[in-house]
Image 1 (cartoon, rainbow, N blue to C red):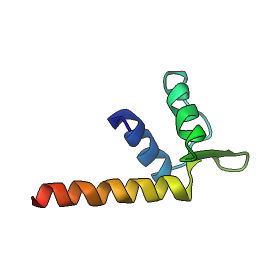
Image 2: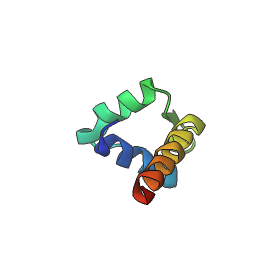
Image 3: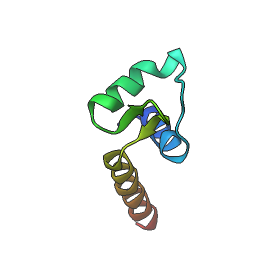
Image 4: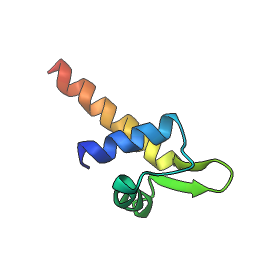
Amino acid sequence: MTYEKLALLRSLAVRPSRDIAPSVQSMVRELQDAGFVKYDAASGWSATAEGCQFIESHRSRELLDAKA
């Protein structure tokens, strides 16, 4: 996953958004197709449980790499 997509996923995990800027809509669609984000009429765009698990697994790998 690219740094930009990961940053967008992290952002949606922290704070859902009703609107997505046109410049990142294609990335959101790719994340949605992968099952990492979803749209809900009540809360807007947010990270799914699968997306949050991906963030945590990536964070764990970053921590292990930093200790090496």
